[in-house]
Length: 222
Image (spheres, rainbow, N blue to C red):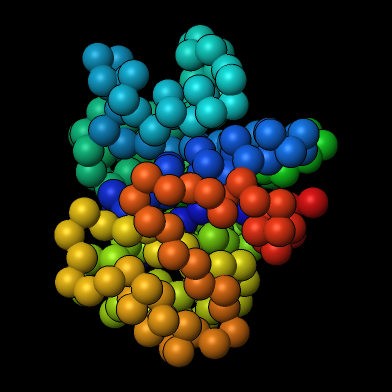
């Protein structure tokens, strides 16, 4: 399952963490990959997405575990292609895809791959996150916010994924700090425009349904 979003800072890591813990609590083997991360520095590591995800799996933040989860790390808090360029580096797209495939093949259970930024964030000079998802040929979980403008952003992201033939298992509306309307109104509107897709509301500080057996089963996490 590839956890992606309509943009940055809307709750991908929160959702991925909750799913990992839910699967673990249900005694289902799970591994989490966050292969590409920008804005990563040793000083800020404790607050990084990689640190949060390792903790959710009960893994120590050793250099080996960090490398295994996030081999492509960049200091600048920019799109991966820009962050890599600041360090005179680049992301080898084929190596990135092969890394994910190898880890999936070597794991007897569920693999959650958390992306970086939104579905169209550039990874290289010619490839974006959606190319990565398509290359892995796996379903996507689309995490979005409830801020003003999210309806257009969500429908655009969903439509872009669908146009590439990517199965969107569900849309999770993670409640933003500032909301123009009640969370349920946003969810109800999205359900009208996405009648074939499950749309869930995720209130701030409440991840109850993310570790519910029925929800996990609905995503094919069996």
